[in-house]
Image (cartoon, rainbow, N blue to C red; front, top):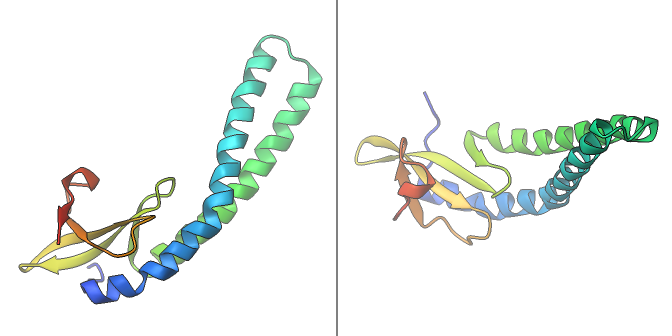
Length: 131
């Protein structure tokens, strides 16, 4: 059984979530940069880019693993509270809640100052409706 949040309980967590996603922004950017570098290195290695590309690939993969670990720690700090992380890149989270005696999600995305939307469990972000 899920933990259910009232709108007020979820709203109280918005400043904390805003800070969490502000902290992970450089990590998200670093992961994107490393991902592009890996693609470039893979292309160089396929076209006989040599030992340097192979050595750099190992280093980049290590950096990516470290950054991914940091990101996973921050996501876990959210999920351990019973909040569902739907998208790290967009900073999208859902709070299980009850509406008319059925389970729904209160929906928040990074950049919003308050929780103003909800959606059915199976509807997702596209099904957001104003509270």
